[in-house]
Image (cartoon, rainbow, N blue to C red; front, side, top):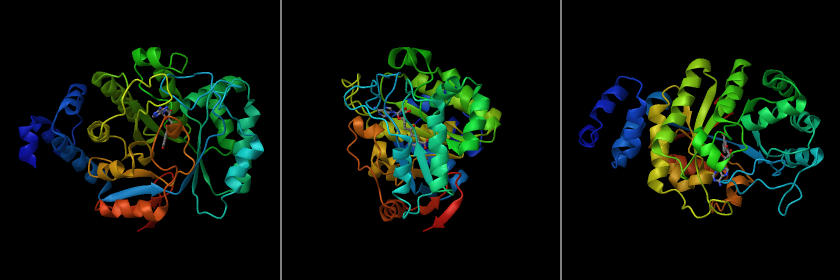
Length: 364
Ligand code: V47
């Protein structure tokens, strides 16, 4: 295999990966542009196995999208809707809590809760949902509100991001998911989500959370109008932030789904690009413990293959995924544990059911 990597012109990067040395932005671009997927995958797998052995993680989780009403209306998003518009919805506090109560008989360890930037729900709504979930299921881990939502909640509360996070933590917030990062490049944000919190703003919220001991994830929405350079700059900004705080748990590359969006003229990402994003991020983000191949977006089969291309996590049972399905995803909305275990075992990895912070719940 090493001769294949050298033949692909990646001999210098092979040396760096072997020595545990960091790659440069220019090398990141070269990896993305290398036509030899297996060579790039080989390098990513070296990093993956060094960090995570043959373990492949999944979680028994529940997604809860309390509302899709959103003032940002990003061009790549089919989920966000104007208030009062067709297909817009918002759950009452009681309805959101009932979603958790309805599944008390299942061994769910995490609720993943995000929504849009709602124009008029009060700050107390978010606090009441957090408290209500903890009341009906005290031991569940609440991973909620993207950095973009947290910034909005701080404005609602009239407090700093740090003070707002402290109040949210007191109410039950345990960690923060990776959404809203998109591509940090101001060019991309101006063209696709001009009203959204800036990339710098997103990173500030994440770093503030880390300062309070909250772990967070990070994402990148790829496969639309971003350049390779912009992808690498996004990864570089995440790597730099992680050097400062060490608070990121996982990076999740998100494949753009164009259906029902204002960018519906674009095509879906290719299988090669899906694997490249997993592999390059694994090599580039040398300080991130985990890379997640989110089966909902790339399909269970591609997520399975990604376990040999850098990924060590496939997300989880999910259930009721809405964001990607409104944008035309053809995957199921949930996956059962035996199926997750099956795809992981067939990939030659050891399935580990994890808690949100990668604590081992069960090894299969
Ligand atoms: O922030 C929006 C993206 C994100 C589309 O942290 C789209 O573990 C594809 O962040 N096509 C929400 N993607 C989902 C998310 C996530 C999912 C699973 C696990 C974790 C984690 C985080 O979805 C949004 C946005 O970047 N998105 N529209 C679309 N049409």
